[in-house]
Length: 308
Image (cartoon, rainbow, N blue to C red; front, side, top):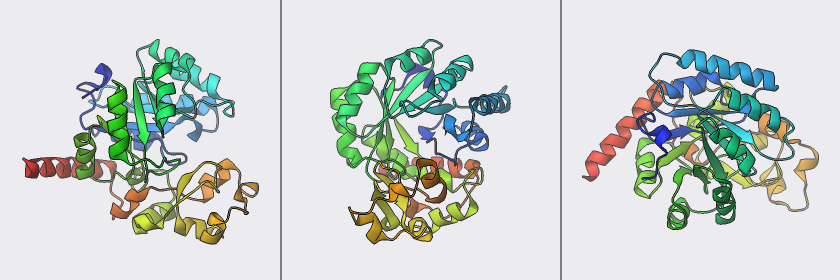
C-alpha cells in the first residue's frame, strides 16, 4: 500500500468523493469529511476567486474542532483557465490539504502545494500522462478508467492499475464505475490504494445537482451511458436520457459530420447535459452522505469477511 503519510490515520475509509462540476459544494464536502472519507470540489464551481475563498472559509469553519478526514479541491491546470494563478494563490494561503490537478501536470503548481505540506493528485487516462505527472512530482495518480463519469479514459481498471504499479512507486487512486463498498474492496484487491467515486455522490441529499439530475442517475442503467467527444470536445460519458431531453439524438452523437460543439459551449454542456458513469446502474436511492458512507463501510466489511 502506498498511502502518503499526510493521509495515514486521517482517511478512515479509502474513498475520495470526486470533485464534480456544478455538483460538489461545501455541504457535500463537509459531510464526506465528517464521515471518514475525503470530500472535494472544483474551484470553478464558484464563479469568482473571491467566492472560492469564501467556500474554503466555510468548509474550514464547519470542520474546525471535529474529527474529520482531509478535504480537497480541483484545479484545471490549463492555459484556458484564466483563474489558475489567483485560485492557486488562495489554495496556498488556506493550505488546502489535497489538490487534484486536471488537464496539465505542472511542477510549479506541485511545488506551491508542497510548500505547505499539501498533496497533489493528478487525473490521468493513459501511461503517457502518468509519466508526465510523475516527472512533475505529484503524490499520486487518479486513474480515470473506462466507465468513469465525466472525461473518462478507455483502459480497463485492472490492466491500468497493474501497469502503473509496475512502473511507479506512487499512490494509486482508482476511478470508474465504483458505487458500492464491495467495489471499493475490489479496487484495493486489484492494487489501488484509494477508490475515487463521483456518480454515486451525485445522487445524495447534500449534492448540489438538480433533483431531476439525481432522479435520472437513479433511473439510469450502465447501458444508458454514452461516451462521446461531441458535447464538450473531449471524450466524456453522458446520460442518454439527458442528451435526448436536450434534443440530441444518438444518431447525432455517432455521426462524425455533425459538430455539436458549434451549438454548445463547455459550461452550457455540463449545465444542461448531465454526465454519469457506468456505476449509475448500481444506484437505487438518494441517501444522505452519512447513510451512504455507513452503507459502503458495511458492504466493504461484509464482503471482506465473506472472502476470508
